Length: 387
Image (cartoon, rainbow, N blue to C red):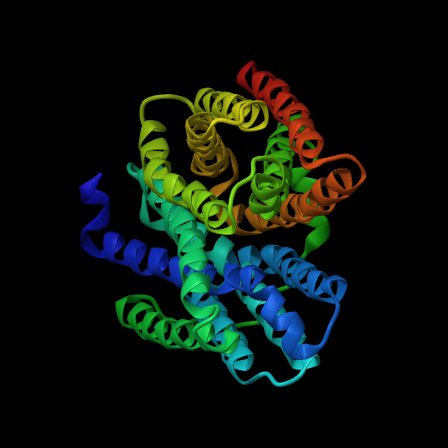
């Protein structure tokens, strides 16, 4: 695995992975600081929640253009532009003194990160052939590390400084990464008008049952991911008598486990098929979630959280390897961007579902019902395995 990190390709991978860590640290730290943001702007919890939904809606909206521009211009152009847009959004958060300015800022951040992700996958697809699974695993480890660091950043800032202070280092680090990426780039920045051509992409993608099946797997997993991650601390505090600190630590542990196991999952794609590994990840998710729901002991919950984290996080590098193998190389940016737009949009409904069921029944009922979603992904993966 170490050879993946060296040479020109390895340096580009390292800079991109650091960009993910920094970006997600800034994006996900917003949620833990919502109480302070609500008090500062004098808004309701519903307005605050709507603003977060708006950010992720902008993220979903940007996925397809990000992939399309990456394949038609170059991934380097889109990566540079997307990081500049995110930096502008984070800078606006630092100086925001009114809620409308806050909305504009997180909209820019969501749109910037929405174009950044597909451009990065296109870059890795271009740079890596033999070790693509390992590269994608390292990328997903960066996703989980950045997510975990957001909890650390929130713990440092809340109670010690104004919430806006959390975003100042994010702006500075993004600036450093923009310069580093520019200096490493060996290709010219070609800019021209690019038609989005949504109709042809839809026609090309959605004529195959295989596409519907893989999209179903990704959408359902994203639904489970968004719903469970958003309410895991609340579930643990309400149903398992965790303290606020214990619940926050458990939340961070999901991402830390993911940072450790996703590179391994990517490397295993060199030996086993992505479908077999996807079934294994789903199995881990089922066992882990059942343990979390069904036990009250601290040891049992710890083991359940670990197993659940393995299943929930390892599916992504595995499925990305599958997609880069089955999608046409010359249109992978557009195709991947379109698929990501759909499953991110579906996944954004996860928190609303879990929250609604928890309100009407209980958190145990809402988390238990996610086992049905895991069962559906097993059926879809088994069907794909027979193709």
